[in-house]
Amino acid sequence: MPLTEINHVNFRSDRDTMHKLRDFYCDVLGLTVGKRVASTTYGYWLYIGNNDVIHLAEYKTAEAPKLHVHGTFDHVSFTCTDMPEMEARLKSYSLEYTTRTLANGIQQINLRDPAGNGVELNFEEYADPDYEMRPSGDPSKQA
Image: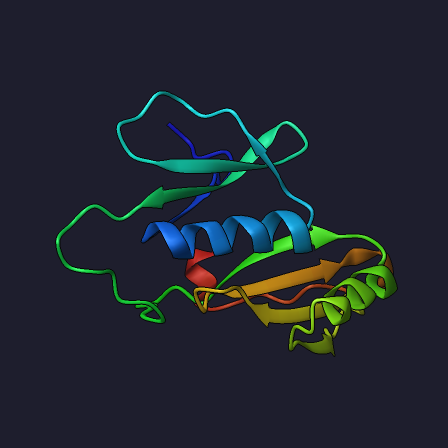
């Protein structure tokens, strides 16, 4: 019964927004469009290597979906390599982003996809191997 990993993130939108999301995640970030299970819903599965990590599905109602409404969702995060190359790529697409260094040395790039979802890119090669992580939240809930 234990959970073992997050399988994928699903973004549901109108078809035009879906194509913008597909192009962003594939052309800008380097994911690839791959096979998906048979479905009556139009969409794409986007892969990193052999793993489908983002599913894009068409929103099927008479009312158009509301974009930039996130509820409690803040961002999707990816582990990356070669921060200078990624920054050059983002600049070539004229995308706005911010950078920061975490306490453990990991470098981050933060930006938004075409639907306004947060995207976090982590470059772990900068991590301090001697950094000691601290407990988070309620200590009684620690693993």
